[in-house]
Length: 208
Image: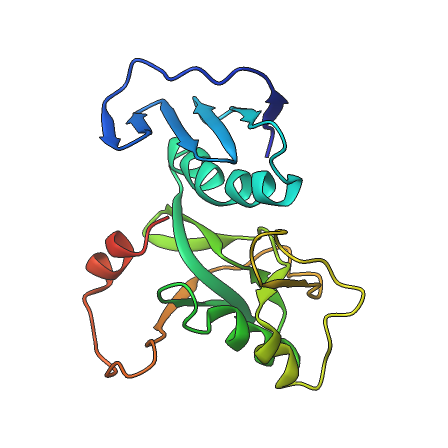
């Protein structure tokens, strides 16, 4: 994926403000994150970052690879799901759920069973000829200390995802180069009941 990422003033574009400090149209995405910085994504090819003075690099990177990357994928015609995905029997299995529900933890456990992680947090889905395919993406799992403890691991030597957040980046195995199709699985948060949803509604709700 060819992307021009640079540090420069990220002035707001002439686009509708859909949320406070967030402007979006077909070719532009702009957001202003307090105490972190401004981010401008244009035409699916360009990402401009204007960090606030003193903003931790980890915080800037988290938003760049999160919301800004999701916008870039949408501008390129891909569907960015808020999910984690692993390869199982030649197919991509993606787990979708709210933050903190255990998507990355499930992916970690499946990795320890021999399944390769394809991506974590953002899964880029491409639909062509009636088939949904998942593109390999960022694979470092963002895990809480309790999740690491479940496999008797410690965060020593691994990086925190952000100085102001409490998750840890866990290195994953190299993913398969090609995944032919994708299967969705719903991860329920604590206390929620398992439920079935129409795939189109699930995809719309959990797009990044």
